[in-house]
Image 1 (cartoon, helix red, strand yellow):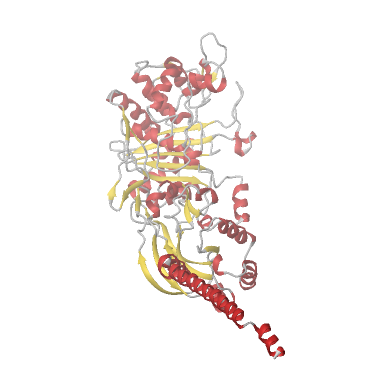
Image 2 (tube, helix red, strand yellow; image 1 turned 180 degrees about the vertical axis):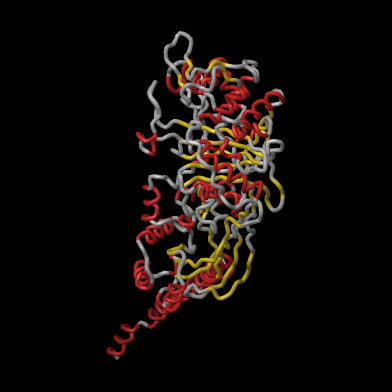
Length: 625
């Protein structure tokens, strides 16, 4: 009995039941709490945050891909294609779909050739990409490279070969300086452009017309929603919004005339600019030598770029817009008009020409290019026709620098012309204020004398000289030159910047008559150009010094290095009775305006007016300016 009683005391059934109940209660509470958490979590995932997680899930399956717009085409005035888009294949990488970028690049390098430029540019683009954006690794894949990549696609997930349209310039060097080129978007440009509109686009206008009309040519980006598998392969397109292509534009440029101008330059350094005086349209704009703009579209190699940079003839330099030269005697018709306008001279006013000019109370002699002068006395007509320096020394002295400056600005000298292109320079029309501000010195009368023959401080671009010639041809209309003629068939007019209605018709007639005598006069400096003309031509020769010649010394071409010899210039317009084209030509170190630059202008005018495709040989007149 005692033993059974001890077992009952040891077991304590009541206590055990109490403990069991408490444990069951705790377990039940824990189960309820866990069930509650699970229900809450399911509610959060499936109901409250359903849209959030559905979107994240779709991002792994559905991607929003930009569709680059087709860049607008560029045509010349006759519909000849100057800039087009051609198919090209590009190897791209999506970083998020690549397990190991280094391993992937190593495999790609085994399959196709990758140079250091490809890798460096890829790393730069990779650093500024957006999530899931395709980053180009190599452009312009060959058919063999495409085939090799296709066979090895299983080894390189996240790598694709994409077909796209890239810019191509079918005329190569012919329009490089006018059109410019497109190139890969740089790191600096990323901060300046609209990232949305340029998503999917790797190129942008860099210089020239391509840059100036970038907004017009680029277009508006489109997009599409695509479904892809776990390896990033596109399975289907769910939604598509097509891009808006860039606008096609037509230019005033004439491809045939441009080709003739380049041919006439024959590889010599210089520039040719031709303008329609009635509209301001640029018919031709040549800078020689040139380069192939296609080299820059997908990134020029270091070797090719270095070759262009180190070329002593500076093919990258746009001489037509950036070259600043003394206009020399081509400016004389403008100063003759100024003399008539201010009443300093009349067409019949004659100045003594002993072959030199001296300022009052000054023993220095400013010599004429023709030793011995052009006759005892010279009037305006003879001075323009024979390019008499002494006449224009006298005229400039009587006008003074203030009136020369004021009148020259009315021809656009000393200011950018406002052409629809990039990197235009303003030249230099000196004045008292300019010299005080830049040199800290007052103006001297001898400096006015030099401006009178387009030398000294005075500088002008070939475009400015062409515009000034166009103003004479149009009898006083200063227009901003324009390359763009129409957009989608809608014509674009060149702005009229000024009209010299206060200059009498008789003054224009006198100056134009002198320019005609340059061609048709017995002693005209451009008389060799009249042979075979079937239209009336007015022109003016010019020779700009590259190095100074000491007083009393004679210019000796043979004693000078070629690059130190005088520049040859020529301006002209035709037909005189109804001008349709005005031309300015400069041939660096060409020496003879009438014999070297003149035939180039003649070839351009013939091509435009007569449809001639040949550069006619013109005898050189070495004795003339």
